[in-house]
Length: 177
Image (cartoon, rainbow, N blue to C red; front, side, top):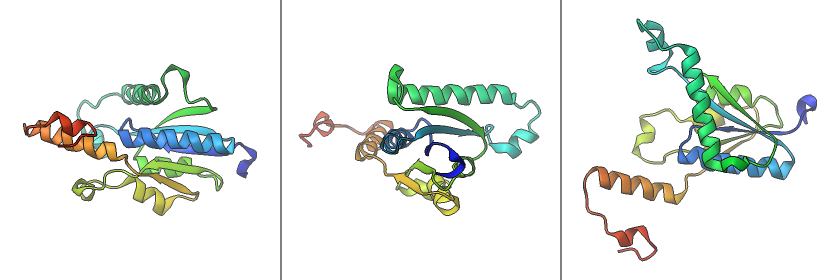
């Protein structure tokens, strides 16, 4: 092991369903190797750094950092409840883009960087992929956890509800219409 420390599973956490799946997988990997979990939530000011710097009355960085910490704690609570992950772990909030922050933190050769693979739909062309950035720039192995099929169904149902399309309750069970 590099740096004489315990092997680390570094995982990006945003609170999304994909990041929660990655969080659970990172815990499994850390448990399997006797390592520790490093749960990382990267944050940026609303509109990004440039907009923040040009703002007349930008929100204080301390407030944004505190909000990021609350989001990280909420994600950990959603994933594990009061019991926690059951392995040694640290939570870390970092100011910056998610991909860059994760690659900089997972800087040991024996680290494992675990990320949610993200959306596979048309929206991925509009937003930079954290997973692609990490795979291209990481100096350690990267494990991209695919989204759950249930996530696709949830997104589809949400879209239909927002478009006020009818939903047959049988579609929500195994007895599909």
